[in-house]
Length: 223
Image (cartoon, rainbow, N blue to C red; front, side, top):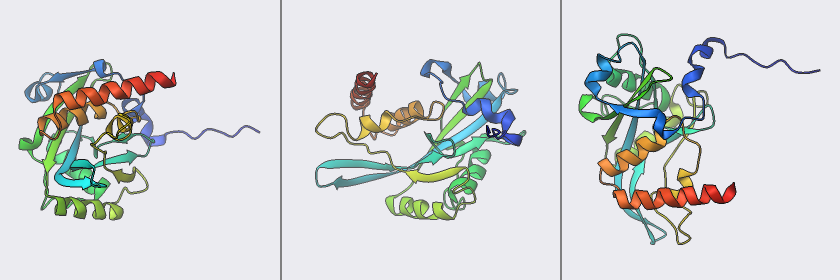
């Protein structure tokens, strides 16, 4: 007897936003101003990257560079904390709300605001606008944020644990950052990560380009 497939229920109207298969070219950068006027009728979402600079070395060999907070989502792909913006809600306020729900962040200490905005993207086919923010904290604060995640309301429901991307490349020119980039990412969160690494001077554009090419070479070798 064939089992009946479960329905999405109340999630079904939002499922189109999370479907896999988006290409980098599906997203175009738009100004924050245009997003609130020209594209105000689109569905909006806001996500954020919390990071701390880290000068320690892994096994006394590889520079850590920074600790960056990403997460395993409910759908089995990697992304940043955040979510949809409610009607009439400011994107930064929406991000703070989602951060409380998903990683139990203390917004009295780490509150995202308009100054933390890095970039806004438009996905025309999905009628979706994505706002991306970055927030720098010190390493001790980052450790506290990691530990608080276990007590988040959505832990084990919408999010299944936080992870740090390895920002070094091992001697085989694959393991480490390039191998991490070969994972499946939600929407354009991989591109957001790469943009943020360059914008925050954690990695240079040349270093990022080399890692991306190594990732692409690895993926081609598996096909």
